[in-house]
Structures are given as structure tokens and as C-alpha cells.
Image (tube, rainbow, N blue to C red):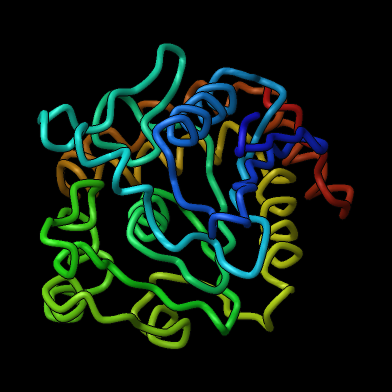
Length: 259
């Protein structure tokens, strides 16, 4: 039985971590299943947004270290299954669709590293984030050393990476790791509302925004600026661009088809 449940609801693909009896500890099979779900999100033209959330009081207390230890010891990293996209965005292309994530309770180790690859994040105010690896004799290998200093600030990140201490939802919000903090139990609904608003936006425009933003992040502003108008003729020639103009003139909400 898979502990990763997927559900298509409208143009949103929901990916749920569903192993609450084990505090949603990440197994290698669960990693594969999340990667495969992201691959489906990327390929399916009917899907516009992904939403990652978890069942239970806690998102996850971490990984099943006894199962991952031999993989790490062999230097294999995170082998991506055929048709999947690495949930840690360390190998191969990233998912081209935006992903929203909702967290609650324990959001430890791999949860933080997956969070860092998503685009908009919601946390319940009882969320505790932590990178515990230095307390287990190892170090983070899912991208936290690459991205947490960039997204949280160097010294903020090193405080938690080097000590293994937990930090709060309020601290995550203050440092920009999450964009909204809500009461416990409300994180899914808040994240779903954000996903729906993104899904209602023009898909070609959304894709171009992610492409340009990621290019600027990876290669610098000058490179991204030099390519800023590369996709503009195609986007402006789309049915969606014409719908955008019509909706402006007619003073109504636009209905976009991604064409």
C-alpha cells in the first residue's frame, strides 16, 4: 500500500503524505511515489498546480533513517524513478508547474528540504521546523545546505543547520520561508485557496514567471534579463493573452485555457 495519495481536483493535483501512524516518516518508496506524482504534474497539460500536504497532527518527524542509511553510505544519493522528478530538485529538471505546500506539527529534515523547492508555503502556527542531521551523526543531503542560507539568510540558516535546534512557524514567517501562518487544522484549506488562485491565472504567464525567476536565481539577473522577452511573442500570440485583453475591456474575470 502506498503512503502517498494523489487526487486530481479541478486543475490541482493534491499529493498527500499519509502515514500518520509512523509520524509520516519518509521511506524510499514514499520518496519514489512523490517523485512520480511530480512527474505526472509536470507532464499533464490538464494540471496547473500541485498541492503537497500531510495527514495527521504532524507533517513528518523525519526519514526512516535505518532504511536510508545504507543508501547514503553507498553514496547513491536519491535515485529518481523513471518518469519521476526529484522532490529535492538535486538531479534532473524541476517540475515546471508551481507547487504549494501546507505543513503542521513536526516538519523535520526532508520536509524542510522539500519545502525549499516549492513556490508558496503555508504553516500551521504549531509547526516546528528542524534539521536534525547533526544530532544523528550525519549532515543534510537533500538541499538544505544549498538553499536554506539563500532563502532564510546565512546566519539564520547556520544557527539551525549547525545545532539541530528547532524553529517556529513565526520564525519561518519572519525569515520568508513561509508566506502564511494559520491556526492548526486550517493549513490545508489556506493552501488549497492559494493553489486555486494560481490555477485561475494564465498558465503560460505562470510558466514564464517560474522560468525567469529560476533562471535569475540559478544564473543571475543579467542572464535572466537577457532572455526576458524570449517567450513574450509566443505568449502574446496566445488565446489567453487575447482573453486577458477582452476581460479587461469587458470588466470581468478572465477564463484562461493555457492556449
